[in-house]
Image (cartoon, rainbow, N blue to C red):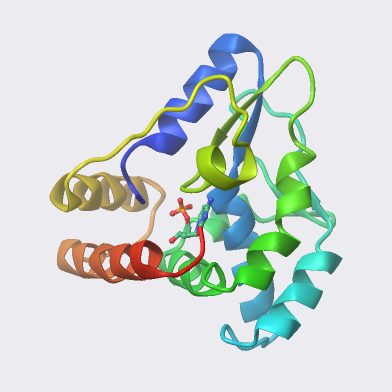
Length: 179
Ligand code: DC
């Protein structure tokens, strides 16, 4: 689930191994951000699929594997807001959207290797992965981690709002019928 530390672990493993990094949550966040910017409804599966097919997404190499660009614009910071996280969880429920984003994710698996993080990476995207790690933590610990992350990135947030938001997203992410 969100905030369990999978992003941090994946990034450090990728750096240590010299592998590429796939932050699949970021891909759902990019789609959500594009939908918000272009006023595409988050429950309009067909429009979201069209948008997913048109995304010009790149992951330019940087030492920390954190930069993500849409077209020419670095959108890394905008992806980490609560509004985008919530919207990402909403676009991710559509089966069509998930398959539209599948090829993009699989294309990242190139030599010398890939560390990928995300809920369905071991089950759906890369079922043949050599190593799968299942990571979990209590909602209180995850909320605290998210809170510290957001505060350090300069955002003004309430602890209680983060916790409530995580609980809502947990339910949505865990009870959807796909992936
Ligand atoms: O891991 P994250 O918080 O960056 O993910 C944001 C949302 O994207 C999450 O609430 C659910 C969705 N997501 C998904 O459905 N499948 C993935 N592999 C990654 C993220």
